[in-house]
Image 1 (cartoon, rainbow, N blue to C red):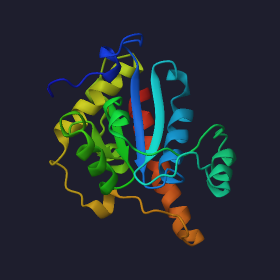
Image 2 (cartoon, helix red, strand yellow):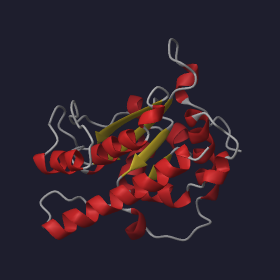
Image 3 (cartoon, rainbow, N blue to C red):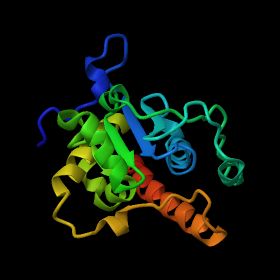
Length: 203
């Protein structure tokens, strides 16, 4: 068992202890992280009262809207991206999160540098977490937030046991990429989101 791995909001005055907060991180907070954020929110919409999703970028220009290509992709899948705009990753965002999912290894490492003690057991790449998550780690747990806590604990304990290199876990930035690379990026995000959401929803 990892010491202290519980929802961060349990110690925050005025916020329900059952809330579980997920932060997705990329570079510009324009494509990868908001796409994963919005897709996860849609897949976990039944648990929206207790699971809070947000995103940020290591080099984001605050307030920049999501590009139309990303917006169109989400709307084609019945996902509403309204109100999504970029913001810069900061220490307080990391420490207010129970799970940090980086688009690539550099984003996971950026979160850990901002708050090593807090983030070390909570920060993964999106695909790394999807690869390590196991629904059985939360067997018998019905509450979605409590399930997420168990899933993060299990994934953190399993890290290092399964072999995979950064190239397998990283999602390349699609900014300026040709259509085929953009489609590959989107497919990798969708696949990871599907696996994570399935583990959370399987009670």
